[in-house]
Length: 303
Image 1 (cartoon, rainbow, N blue to C red):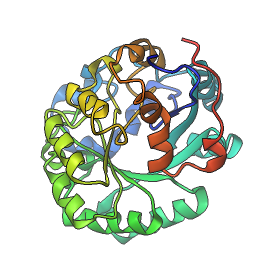
Image 2 (tube, helix red, strand yellow):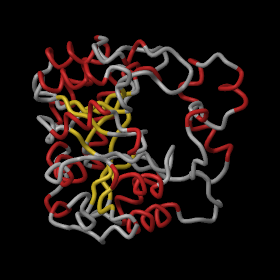
Image 3 (cartoon, helix red, strand yellow):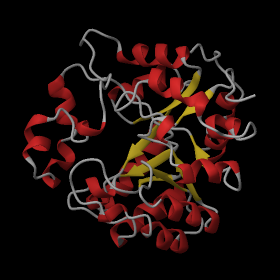
Image 4 (cartoon, rainbow, N blue to C red):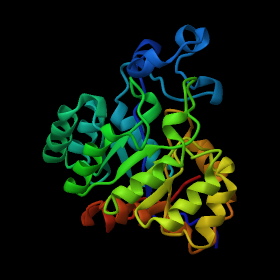
């Protein structure tokens, strides 16, 4: 059978395009203090640009960015997108509540204010997850740093998953905060917490699989990876004991076009029974996406 074409895909990571290069550059100011090399600081439009080609994330300022994203979702059979709590994300959720859910970014260096922010965003926007970028924090803090622990506790209280970058970081700054071994201690200390590892976990994907086997609350999504580059350890795990743990995240338009994603996608050697879980069912369950959305399937993938 292969990849289904009318499933109603859940994409766990879609963003909105920028109206100018300057707007794009400003987006990454939050971790610019961690960068030292001249190319990252002055020459690249975004700090991981050396890894990606022809990134489709700048449009004319007159373009309706929500409509722009929605048209592309329809074209590729994406029924629901998880987007950030931003001006465009909030509008997308307000105007199309059956197509968008929101996720909050958290900076644990903000202390109690970070917890208040999460509570406020849950109350006002019904966020379905929170995320932390350990290497992108200023100052950096590891996945298992105790200053992150109150945020983990708050996610348990709010009953939302925590999405955390794992593995070697793309921008040219230290990766030690995201070593996959750090997840082991957090899973031990917070057995009720649902954790979703983002951005690959490389080169420790075998360890990531071992930890997912060990800890029920640990999951993985494919953010920042084109399907032809999905780690072999992850594909094998999904096809054996991990079908309920691996989820699709396209990372469009920050790094990859949907054309690239879905040109490669049918060639991923998932078993037939894995595809619905990978593209939809696991995301609905882990992120508790509302039942009204879960019942909808959306348009078929047009290719």
